[in-house]
Image (cartoon, rainbow, N blue to C red; front, side, top):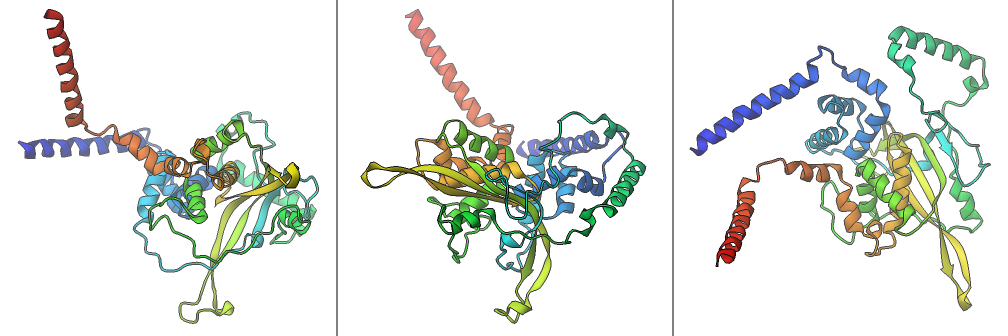
Length: 373
């Protein structure tokens, strides 16, 4: 009897999977992986960040397989990541080496190197562009040709191929307005190999935040500003660009000249300034600044800023506020964990539910007997 039930369930599952594929291709059209990678930059960056895997092609494949569902795409990519062997550790990357594409500060109007707006939707009108319906490869080629010709007649064509700039907050440190940032050479924890344990280290918190579901991280950071802590941070600096990744020579270790350049990763980095009131001697109160830090794969500025807010918030544990409770925050922002548990509610719960029904029936029956008596 049990075998028949299992067999029948297997056939039903196979037909469900067939139907899933049918729903994806029923129109007779499909998006190839190259088109997804080229045209869905924001979604690609989000999936790579939440998956802890930097590979635009694989992220595009996961998005195609998941039919554009980011949570399912992250699940797929994390599952693939777990099968990949780790052969090397990269050298420490200094974010000052970033080849900058975009870099702004909301704290200062004039910053060394200037505000670099780069590519952003911040200054658009957020109106639907119906011209995109008619966009073709030919119109794209024509636009690119005109754009490149325009560059040839501007100073932008003479700009350096690599642009590195100092950190804005370093100037505040030189003035003694914020504390210096000391190097910490402690080996970071790896939450992909060892489960979270509380209290967490800062490296564990930052990893969890950068892997966290973008909407969840943003929502909790918003709660910090609205009520839980009543904090109003300022963006000291946010920068988007590429960072070089190198590894040590597999044999001759310790020699800086024997490193191998593997390529670049595009990241978003945010350094947040948090005003806090500190009580000094004789009851005197002064305003000081604390720092919140965020960094994630690709261009996802909202998430990097939200990371910086929660990073600072979790540095000051307070179980009175959910946003300052590391166990609450870190356990509930993980997209695979949270969506996985919610989705498991669709799975069979016959035995437990029938047990609850029996309990309700028994209670109702006893109530009826009491009324009769």
